[in-house]
Structures are given as structure tokens and as C-alpha cells.
Amino acid sequence: MPADIQRTVLLRALDGRHQRHLALAQNVANLGTPAPNLLRLDFEQALAAAARSGDAGRVAASPIAGTRDREASAAPRMDLQVSQAQENAARYGALLAIVDRQLQLRHLALNDGRSR
Image (cartoon, rainbow, N blue to C red; front, side, top):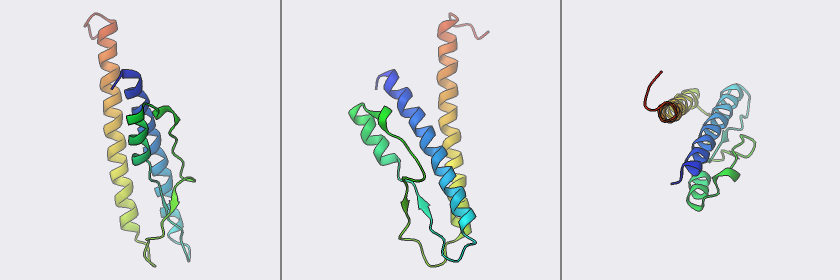
């Protein structure tokens, strides 16, 4: 995968994870209402397809674009929403580690292999 497409996919993945976190936060906030509508953000499939076609720059994630979760039980569970938020945060952290490593490599390349 060319570097510019890789960078675009990585940035879109970070955007998607951020939007998923917003949707999960909204879900947690709505759990106390009588009939909560849980949001679900399906972003990975669209990003993977766009990356394969080389068009990842046009993929956007939005919790508004997320689908209402019709499979939710009558009594949504707080523990599941929090667990999903924790998993999302871990994946976001992993993506940030990749970005950090790429920036370190660029820094080394620009400085003839010297770290400082």
C-alpha cells in the first residue's frame, strides 16, 4: 500500500474510532431514558473497501450516520456499552502508537539516522 494511502487510511481509522467513542458515550448517556435508542457505527467495512479501491480519503464516520441498533434488547446493559468503549479506547491507542512510530521513522530519515 503506498504511503499516502496508508496515511489516509490510518487517519480515517482514527476518525472512525473517535466517532465510535462519541456514539458509545451517547449510548451510555441515553441508558437512563425510558426507551433508549442505541447508536451503532459500522465504519470498518466501508474503510476496508475504500482502502482496497484507493479511495479512503472519501470515507467519513459520523455517529449520526450510525444505524439505530434494532437488535438491542428491551433492557440495554451499561456494562456492555462501557466494555465496548474500553475496547474502542484500546484500539484508538494502538492506532496512535502506529502514528507515533511513523513519525519517529520520518524524524530519523530527515536527520540522517540521528535521534536528536
